[in-house]
Length: 155
Image (cartoon, rainbow, N blue to C red):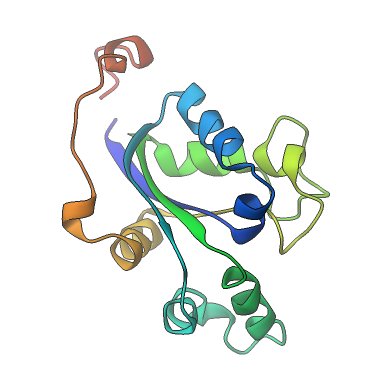
C-alpha cells in the first residue's frame, strides 16, 4: 500500500465560525500526516480554474463568491489511502445528510456552506495540490508516530 497526498480546503465559513482547530484535529487524530498548510485569500481567477467543472451551472458565481468571502486554510495531508480516508471523515457534500461523527455531519447544515473541500481522486488531488501549493511549500518529514499509526508492512 502506497501513501498518497490529498488537498483539503477549510472553507470561509469554517474560518469565520472558529472551527479550524476542530477540523484539523479530526485529521490528526485519524493519523494523517500534515505536509503543508497556509491561510490564503482566494481570487476569482483561482476559483474559476478550481471550479471550472461547474462553469455552466447557475450557482457557479455564488460558489465563487462564497469561497472569496473570507480566507481559507489550504492543507495537504498524506497517508495510506489518504484521499478516501479524508472523504470518509468529511462525509457527504450535503451537511444535512451527513452522519453525526463526520466533519460535515457535526458542523454543517448546508450543501454549499459545508465546511471543507476535499479532493475526490488521485488525479484531482495532484492537480489541486499544485494549484494551491508551490513544491517548496510541501514538506517531507518523518513523524515519530508513524510506527504507531501503521503496521510495518502497510507502507
